[in-house]
Length: 134
Image (cartoon, rainbow, N blue to C red; front, side, top):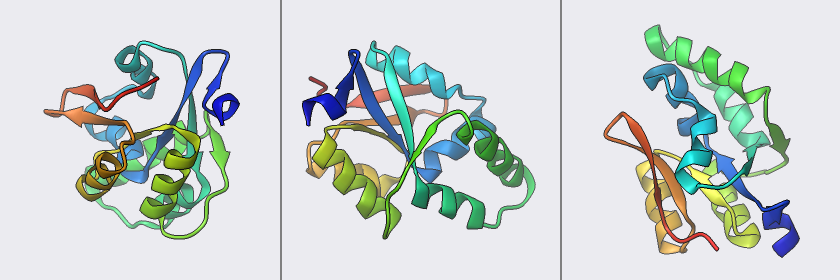
């Protein structure tokens, strides 16, 4: 698994739907993840996250956030995950020693319980990392 986790000293970061919506809401740059972990990273988006993002109906500013998220997602590699989004992200992250970027409270709690590092938006202004990275 070591080669899956670190490629050219990069660490893998999985984005969830909630996190993908943040740039449109808070003018956040996804690339700032590298500043938080102080390392280059490979950002992956699960296919079921993309399906969920395309499927959700939003209005007003949230609709714009969705459009921004869909545009941003074009820059990153999509990985095939099936089943419930949160559970599949958790299992993939555990099995591949990845970091998960999310602001979903339940998913963050589940990740913490399984010792999976989490990147989240703190106080609506900056990203924070919780958990240990090898």
